[in-house]
Image (cartoon, rainbow, N blue to C red; front, top):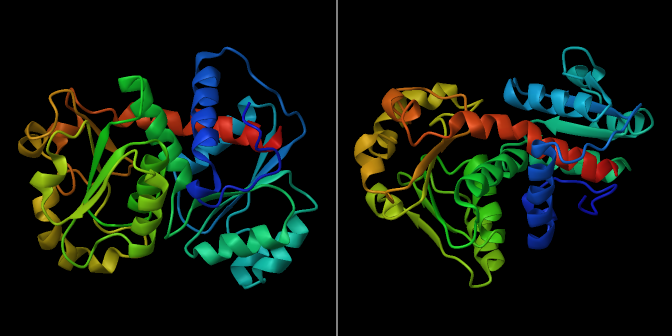
Amino acid sequence: MPPLSGRDLLSLSDLSPDELAELLAFATELKAGKHHPQFPQKVLGLLFFKASTRTRVSFSVAMYQLGGQVLDLHSGVTQVGRGEPTCDTARVLDRYLDVVAIRTFDQAEVQEFADYASIPVINALTDLEHPCQILADLLTIQEEFGTLKGLTLAYLGDGNNVAHSLLLGCAMAGMNVHIAGPNGYAPAPAVVEQANRLMQGLGKVLVTTDPDLAVKDAQILYTDVWASMGQESEAGQRLPAFQPYQVNSQLLEQASSDAIVLHCLPAHRGEEITHQVMEGAASRVWEQAENRMHAQKALLASVLG
């Protein structure tokens, strides 16, 4: 079990490359049923301000399988929905819970919660990062290829929270990561710079507007919705700009012959990915979704251990 007891995970960069590798190895062991740590009477709080299917269910099942319990603390049933300050909520929940996963908009809100709570705080998604998703993604890629180092992942679409965490996670794993999207939708320069520092010469970051260049010889093609939660009103103007970045059969043919396709879901079939590719032989989308539970189970056990 990785030595993460009591630690927060607000960003993938909170882990060292060695800790990331250990966490993925631990997730592999748990998935294979080699051993199963138990945390009876431990309670996970899910403090969610954004709707969720995979994150809510995967965290809940993971905690139940570890012998613990889950409280769903969405804003409709707590005082946070009526404006209670984050610092007050944090100090109260800190006295009740053993670990909390927060899914919200502003990264600063997760950071503030962690500043005022002594229990482990996990970023279950913010507009800046989605670290738990990328743990599952890297686990899926490692299962497929047996290694991470030296592989090339091409992400096509909006330079959003998933793109940011992919940059960091791939960099720490020694992978090349290519981000392709239209002008004005690139990932944050600060995150790109951070990924380049984390690479330490083991890989390369490419940010481009050319989808063909991004996918050339890539072993992993990855996409996400073109308008994330809170951006639905922009969907009409985004669609024409993002159309050249659709993951379809023609684009897949330009990647490596053994390339796989990933999508963090939910998917808008016919927009960022075609039905044919999502249901095709290269798709590992359902394995990727399953691995949310295994990766998060490893994370929960590690921070509680």
